[in-house]
Length: 378
Image (cartoon, helix red, strand yellow):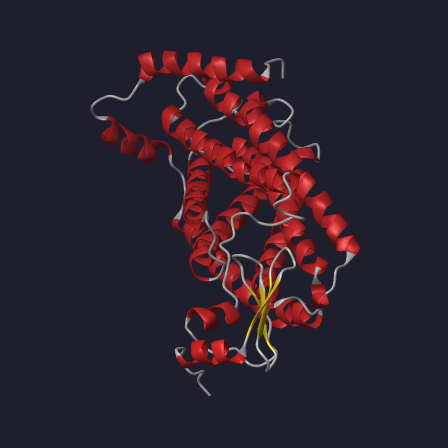
């Protein structure tokens, strides 16, 4: 493509102003929108039911694979309790995105289509109700079914994270884009959108699994640590290149500038482009998490790869202390706040802080504090 990156945004702004002046929304835009939906939308009840059935199938498949394969295997690998809970999610998503990205790559580069090389081909020969080729149809219904599952999984199966609400919005938006582009036969550009997004999820889930393997059995393992660093580096580069660089060049420019000369009467210009831009802004926002992780590593606040979206969980020992419960003799407790270690050895309490200082409290002080705490339940 001969257009530079910054020039893309200038041209998009210029074209949107022209489009707004010539075909901007009128007072009856809601009525006009539904009229266009009924005129240009072609999706059957069977298509919708198939997507819903696939969504249920993905949920059942994930539950069975987690219960029968992933959880026993990760337990056998001696993952930490935390990693045993979240790694089945990572493993299932890694398998799905790897297969989906491989199939999407095959569709784009098997020599049958050339709309990735020249995105103007996405619009040539378009007409309302045109048939969708079977290979693209399979990709669409599988992806829509998976995002139906993802909405349910984010609410009821996945670990809750800082961006979980935005993730639900993303899944709803993605399914809306997929349904809409399928119904009005903008499926060619939709394949490119999927291709540019799925690859980063492959590296993300791979890196998370490597982080879990790094500390299996309570020991440090070098190779998974190296692979996690390589994986997250590829993840950051792929996200930057595919979602923040190629996406505006290939998708936003094609839909905002290329489509109109080829299809002067193409419907839903503002609606379709608004959803694509919303997806782009989400990608920018999520990229801040990647930058934040890199900053933490550079300044020494993080010693390795971690998911900065995760909400820290209290350990069982911390919950016991917070509730005023006793700690059994000889138990160790690491505070998330000051990384101090408390140990009761029968003669008193020894506190070891981050700097190695030792403070000893005698038994009388300990008994005095113990008398004011709630007794542990049997």
